[in-house]
Amino acid sequence: MTLAGIFAVYKKKVLNEEERKRIAECALKLKHRGPLRTIGIESYPIEIFFHQKNHTTLFCYDKERNQLFAVDGQIYNLDTFLQIKSEGYNYELQDVDINLLIKNFKEKGSEIFTQLIGSYSGVFFDGTELFGFKDPVGAKPLYFCETEDIFAFSSELKALAPLEGIINPVLPGFLVSSSSKIKKLYSYPNFVVKYKLSKKYIKNLLSNINNLVKLVIKDNININQNTCALLSGGLDSNIIVHVAKQYIDDLNVFTVGTEGSKDLFYAKKYAKMYDLNHDWFEVSLEDLLDILPEVIYALETFDAALIRSSVPMYILSERIKSHDHFGVVLTGEGGDELFGGYEYLTKYQTPKSFNNELLDLIKVEHKTGLQRVDRIPYKFSIEARAPLFDIRLVELSFKIPPELKILKKDGNVAKKWILRKAFEDEIPEEFIWRKKDKFSFGAGTQFLLRDYIEKQISDDEFYAEKEISKNIILRSKEELYYWRIFQSKFNPTEETIVNLGITSIYEI
Image 1: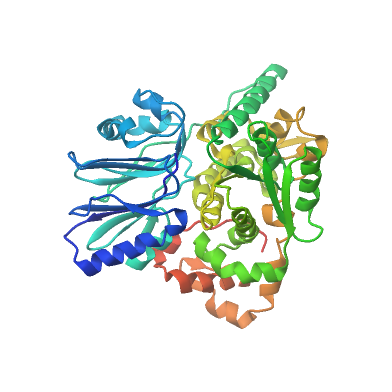
Image 2: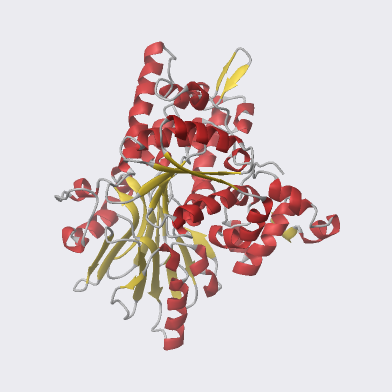
């Protein structure tokens, strides 16, 4: 079930032909997410455009009741939730009672986000108001913008930018209405605080992690879709590939890096070991510079850390697109946030401070790492899925003690220890215990751009331009370079900038 792109408008008045044309032009800015379709709701008060990637999509419209329901993403248990009989995850209009859908969303409130399993965002119109919603993790994007004439939802910021209003993201686990009401429908569980680290306790955790990781990866694989995977040779992508190859015959994997990069070395070795179809290639500084404007426009940010990691993913996505038949790519996003994979996390001294930082990382992920996972592949009409960010695995991670995520023993530190341990018997030691590298660092692109840009902008330029506003100060020449491109393409309001995801800790 993949809709791919939504642009929905609640009209506060009857729009003239020029105004309607402008809205249609906004919707077309999402054409990379799939062919544009419209449903005949052109009369006051709503109009909806959607980009349908394929015909296995949940889009329901009841003309008599004047109701509409559309989902971008996957909901794995919708048939159980609605108590309907259906095989697989493909829903056609006649399969679903739209009134039942809307009734469940409105009446069950917060329960809906504890019952539905999947990665999704969407909109529905109940005959009176237009609503936008997003699952608790937020891998599928949705924004809203209000002007004097309209209230609009969009899958990407770029489609709302021409409206010249304040753009806000629909936050994960929230419901937003065209009457400007915002309702929180989900809260993450509390971290475990009472436990005894017995052998049995740890053994049960390891078993639960192993089983659930395999389940969520399996759920993200649809035999009717051509699915491939990214392979960095690191822990998370190795686990994804290790499980995926059991369900996908002749699995294709892709790797990018500079000459001599760690990713290329380990990925080649792993792919050869398991006889995978491996497409790998090297990139240069010139390759990165050539695509920067396109990366920033697709990504919708000026955050240096995010752009660094998006450039190699852009090149990977373009390479995958050249094969012409892959519609879905699996990525390893999520392991670092759930299991403690970042180097700076080792500095937290108390379980509470460590857990609070992980919670902050999870909450902001929808506009940092998961934004990259969504925007960059979709620039090439490819859907990326991050199985490790499945809500079931996210909630399980709250039950894991901090000292099992980052294990400190005899002067040694093992990040993501329990995740490694859960697959220790299935994946060779050199891969399962490989040291964590950021995507851009492992690919060898970490400082290529930074070092080049440092020479292009003078100190005087940086100090003269770094203050965007009293609340927004650019942190480096690299970020200024990206900001200039971002501003030229989006001309954003200060309020919109404040709502962008900015990586708080990165190497300048």
